[in-house]
Length: 65
Image (cartoon, rainbow, N blue to C red; front, side):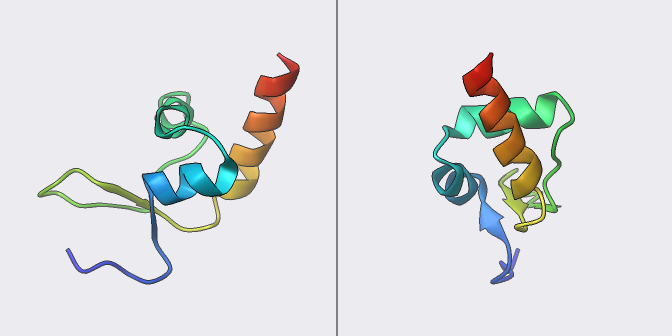
């Protein structure tokens, strides 16, 4: 799969939010975000910046929890 420059790996998204990769996967499991693309060969997930606001809100809620 050719990677689009506007797509970010799960690790890049996690780093931008200051959370672990596992937290991003947890957000997916809870239905808070979905990857924009998935590489069928490697099962890697790629995201645009669109899911970041809901991830940031979830991260804040996690701190308050």
